[in-house]
Length: 389
Image (tube, rainbow, N blue to C red; front, side, top):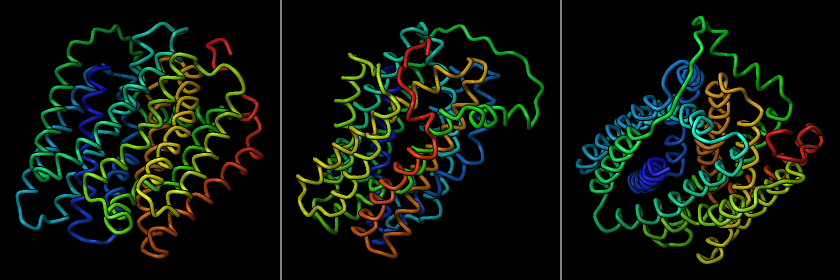
């Protein structure tokens, strides 16, 4: 938990620093899309092999190795930032490295959690884990933006590197018994997670809903442009805007940890994604810093409900020997919705303008919810998230 808190804090601060630095250099929202693409492509190529690695090798050691790579990448960004006008090609190359590490980190850390807690306590553990993650995503952007505003990018990246190394040290203290069945190395083994998800309509529906909803409604990628050109609040204000979704999500995560969702989980998930789309529209229309913060907080709260349902379904409906590969499939979908969503947002903003692009994305999310409700009735019918269901 402590390692996850520290590294998430670090990566969130890094996201604010990279976004502001790139937009400050280019003043072009399209480049914010390239930031997302640089992180998505390695995830797309490496996440499925990363899931195979998580199911065949020590998940704890994989996580530690990824933390070290995060530290190396942040250190490289610090060196690049010492140049007066940093070459964007080098910066994007480092983002590709960080995206590659995340392709292995995501499946390994997700599959490790069920090895640490009893099965009947897993939904609560997932909620508490989400609470820790959201706490880091509240503090990371806010303090990262403040640090960037006070000291510049170099100090921010150096701090991120140090935190990643601390997370690696904390993970070395984790003691867990892992069993990894020997499998023939083959393409079929790597793709087993894909086959498993496709065969389970509930998992496929939950993951697909998140993919298309966040892909279209990804307003967070355009927050640097909103902060500078619409609200005029600077990098510290950008940090607050980036932290607002996590603030709303953290409140909901604590509530779910104390009282896990027990009834009508599928309907609640669909409703939460609809609220996510509506809040995205408000972000696009807002000219008030306070209203934007409130809409982003609501957006994050709704997204947390969807994330909780999806993660719990994945962990409860997947055997341990497959969790790494199924988690890798989920990671590809999540990365497509987040990083590829950043590219979509950048392209749409370059075409329609920043505010219109955000509003159009929110409307698209509402259409996705309507389509998912009709196309995947099995998801709508999910009621309980108990281990027996």
